[in-house]
Amino acid sequence: MGTSDHSAARSGLNPSTDWRYCVGRGLWAAQLELMTLLDRHEELRKFLAGVQREAGAGLAELFLGIDPEADPETARMAGSVLHALFIGIMVKWFMDPGQALSAAEVAQGLQIIGARLRGGAAGDE
Image 1 (cartoon, one colour):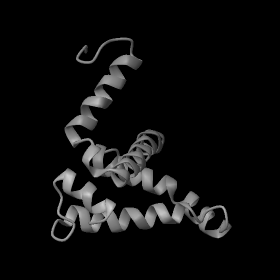
Image 2 (tube, one colour):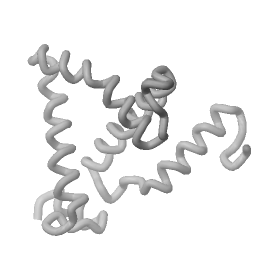
Image 3 (cartoon, one colour):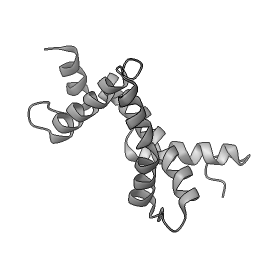
């Protein structure tokens, strides 16, 4: 059993039957591999840099209901934060799925961060 198989077992995912592992891991691995090529392939870097705004706008619309045509600046900011969070979560999951946060834990973590940035404690409204 390889290292990634052990990580999958700890996370409760079965690499041969669980679509979250099979589809997600292959897609995420391809995205991470692309990052290693950016210094040597200027066209690829320019292409990926060019689609960042679209990716963020799409995430803002999909997850937050922000219409990028009606409010492009809000979509840009919120979508960029979502995109950065997803990339970070993806990398952490790829390293060890067993330590990956659940959606509820991500939401709670964001609430804690938001409260601290506003000068309060989590749960303070």
